[in-house]
Length: 478
Image (tube, rainbow, N blue to C red; front, side, top):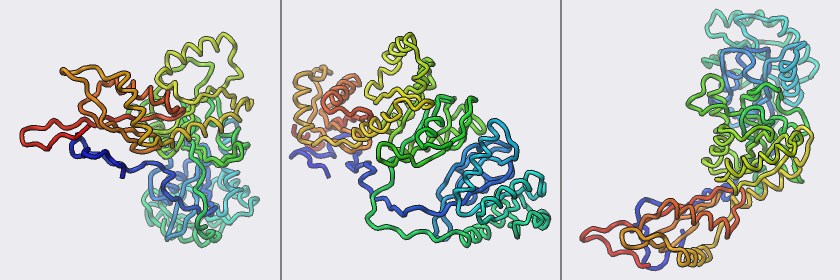
């Protein structure tokens, strides 16, 4: 509990207050090492994402009644009867696919190669198709254990149709309804039986990698940057905006440190204005930002800074994440564009002058090595704590030199200040009366000038002393 000066009682001030810290580093995280991986594959629109949601027990994978919604390989944490594993959702696999479909199929094949067990999903209401038979040949080449799932067996008659799938040569099919949950328990038992043993928990191991969300409007190069950092085609890249739907996460080594990067869907509209796939993708993106520690917001250097760009930045700030703004496609910017971009930054990003900025090119790799130091600077600020004594000495000198404007015949004063928490830094001022919003912004600006906080939002809250009526408690002493 923070020490208060003698005679100062929190009960004398308006509003409740909690001195607990939101610093994620203060909580211990278990590190269990790698867990078994289960890949879910099949041709388009057989219900793979619905099955993934059934396995993980929540609606997290984006589902829509049309093919091609899932495009990357997307991992989710899952557990059944106390055993943990990772389930990987994939896009629809098709032989001889071209363009974007070929990239989606390639991601599915990579998921198969890196999995311990493969779940092959077939639509029992349609039966085995030529595409299913071609997929079986691909699966046999992988030499991985395969569990055949006859999905959409929503009633007993359709369950009987699963017998015909023995012809695929993958053994006994499991008739299930991923939508309604029929047969899912038996399937999960069979998955656990096929998995290798989970490694034991390592006591006293360090916490996991720092979490970084890549966010931005569509087609600014988020997936290209993730692929550049991961040194592999981790996410499907296409010139068509909106290619990424589900958040795609990867462990990336940069500058001698492992980071957990999450590529998110590009945000076109506000969540409440979106519909269908875009609505769920917006929700997943918002969740990814909330779960991250730092947001890397990508802007297209060649385009004007748009309202969408500013909305993405606002989303990261409102979530309280550390912030790095990366101007991508810098290799395409000529001197004239740089002149106008400087003007746009001064005008449109004036409220986030504190953000760390880097100029990069995901396509060529230009200055991508500057990203890790930028993220570290932002995280250091995000977790900075100012000693209470130093904070009060500095604030006393500031308010004496520039006092609050007089309101109602007197100027409100700061009685005491404390930093309530970090991640992001949060400051509370106990005062004799309300402060003008402009004066609070003045204190925030001066805090940054004194202590830096480069790359981190900060919060300054004022707790005015209660107005006491007749018979009320004695006022707090200054």
